[in-house]
Length: 308
Image 1 (tube, rainbow, N blue to C red):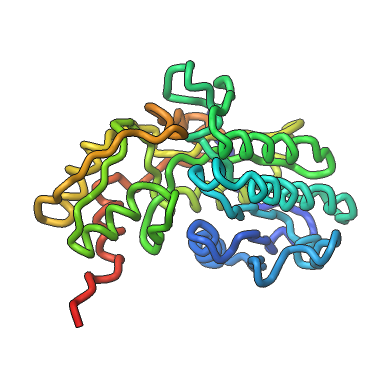
Image 2 (image 1 turned 90 degrees about the horizontal axis):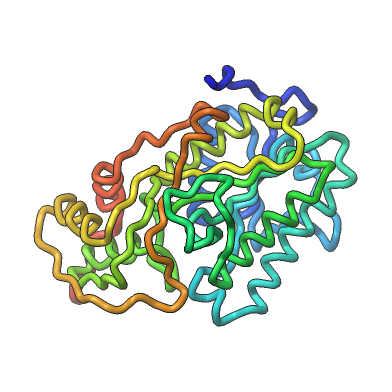
């Protein structure tokens, strides 16, 4: 079915949105996307939390759409720090609980994980109705967050199961995706580390943020749907690490040495997403191909350090 024309929610504060996790990689890009669309954006971070005690800040209560893109754990860290996993869960659960007092029914959009929540026994590509059975602490935590949001009947919950998001400005931090680590290695002229041999779905941050903007613009349509709306957001294409390596070599314009390591216990095998529902519901589709996206990401990276 063809998606209806994009419309903004006709409620008080419709042109006001909140981004919880606004200083992170996705949050920073999301703020820019929303502001470019003419929306008033309220950003909340660890330094400026979205709640004071158990009470939400007034801009959150007045926002037509609230994006929750915050999180303090990675797949690797989730295995080692269950306390932080629990803290992430309670931080998210506070939001729908405190929204009981909102004067309208806000749209609450959760950035979840399309790469970790699905049953590895099922064959990809994974769509919204594919069986969920996380086998990692990170995937289990994301699924619990989804369930906590889905029970808040006084909101309009939307879950976006994102593929591996990458793009300019993404820092190479322990436990994060392969692309920022490889881009850093290219800039530092170091050997790339290839862990395992899996295929993954890589989506450019600009495409992921465009999907979130489309959610806001289709708020009226989403409010008419009972219960939670879940959508998978990715490129819809599997890419092996070998293919990713070749794309990056072309973007760098030179050969890139690789050191291979075995897969880790929490690493999934092949994972990619079926994004046809997002096209139908939101009129959204990814626009940035991996080759173009890697060139964009590499060009924006900091130059290699020079010896002092």
